[in-house]
Image (cartoon, rainbow, N blue to C red):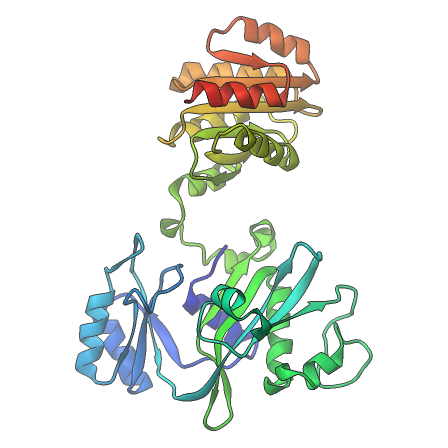
Length: 382
């Protein structure tokens, strides 16, 4: 779950990271009141979860109270890359001497958290990686080191080589900023905690001018305070509906619905469909032991996606019974009238019973293997 900038900044302030004074507003009147409380100049920032807001006209500085009204009125309701701006952040505009990038994220290749630093702050870090990769410093954080860390003291329990912090260019950033950002990342179950830019003011103070935090969806059950930030209006409506139905689902831009039982099997099925020329419209994991009603609920969800031209079920029956899956498909088709072609591959528990049920249908195409099923659904959806 991606937090809005104002939510991410509130979280950073909670962990002791300095941020500019500011509050979110939903009306021009509220924006004017906030500006009067903070004092001019202020920066007015569209609260939408996209990059490049400044270039798109969603971030502007107001130096007078008339400008606060004019700019707030212009940004509220603005369409930024398909998202309508409903909230703006009104914050103090700071003068600063230098911009940095500081972030912590999960590196799946090294199976570790990684600290990322760059002196090229204020621009998209992906662009820096392309044009000036030598400007980016990555330090793997040793997962076995006890917390909390004390970067300033040579305690022997630092998560990485202290020299990289103290002697390298990262030494320009106060160690307590790094410590607090890591505590935020760790305690919030984040997959990304990013400050860009982290600015140094003329007085030498370091302040998070912008912030981005992404929380692991799988940890929201224990991050109830953060989970309450979730605003369904900014989610894909089908993904929001899937969450309501407790279905593990990710919407994709293709035309073939992919369902399986187990994340690994679903991802492998997606790869196989792409290998033979198809484009997955979703990742949908039925999970283990799904009954017919759960299968029917998944099909009801997919029916709401107008881009889907065909559906491929890849079922490896263990806890999940193959006949239950087929019964769910039959029930859903009767109830909601799924019209697109469907291919099903069954193997495992109660496979023969499932196949007998299949013979009673005229709308399900059987495949003896995953490769055969992928090829068949791609042909049926051409």
